Image (cartoon, rainbow, N blue to C red; front, side, top):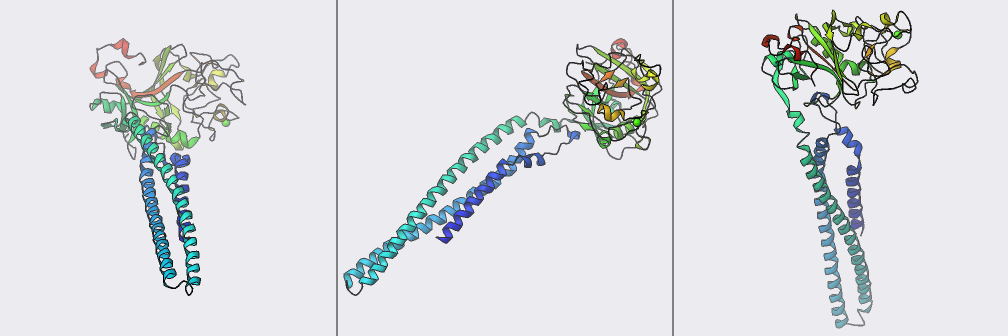
Length: 432
Ligand SMILES: [Ca+2]
């Protein structure tokens, strides 16, 4: 009996352990390490499927162990039954041999028989319980297998993400395009002074121009209220179909922007909530190293139809508005690093990282507002204009719907570049 109870306790423990594993979603979360370099969505269906696949062999082993235990118990019961038969036989023989002499012995034997029969009944009940548990586990296993199968099916689509990294590499996306990269997508690039290659989204157009994309806003799915480290390393998600939001990272932007003797043009593309598209280009775009707080510099406004908001804007509040909202020469600020020209902390008040002055006329890392229009009340405790702003196009109380920040060597900015003469007019329009 003791050994049976012990076994039962073990089996129940085993079951408890099994269900704890299944129900613990924190394990799933821990198993999922969001890695924006690979464009994984966290948690991915693949990640969960992987987890289930890992977990399945454990459950199968548990079930096998349980079956063995059941078999042992069944053997024990069989032994007890044999014993009862043997005792009954002995009793009959004893009674036949000498009823009086062996009467007492016979009584003892009968007691034994009763006890054994009781024990068999109790063991049979335990076996019944164990069989119920086993059946329940079998059912759960079946459900799990079906779930894993469904996830396997679903995984076929998103899992392609990780293999859709293009094989061509270069020092930037123009280099990638020059070396034969023909489709837009994810590529590894390694700027001149970069210690290791890193993943970027390259927008490669029909003129063979390779734009290296630095920033993307499309739907507000990624919060841009991040600290210095996050802005330094980058955050959000790169995707091969350009469907996600991200900040590439100040360190990478710095390394890209300073590597070449051919300077870059920074193009800022914006879409408002009517679907209208505008852009602004800045020549000789550079971002300084971290020691200089990733300072933004450019030589001149190179054109575009969105206006030159980087040069500041006269909001009509104060004659110094334009001077104090220009961005050229500003260091980068985040809520936890105030490098702006304001007594307070622009980045903290606006909940973003940007080349803040006192504070801004252009603010593409601002808070995402559905529908565009917002008010001081919507802007939270500080009440300042903190949307996605380009003041020379829309009011600072209008937050843009989509933005792209991307760079290209200046000698390729004219449509066609070396393949010139294709269609100059079209090439300067923002791509769809
Ligand atoms: Ca300040």
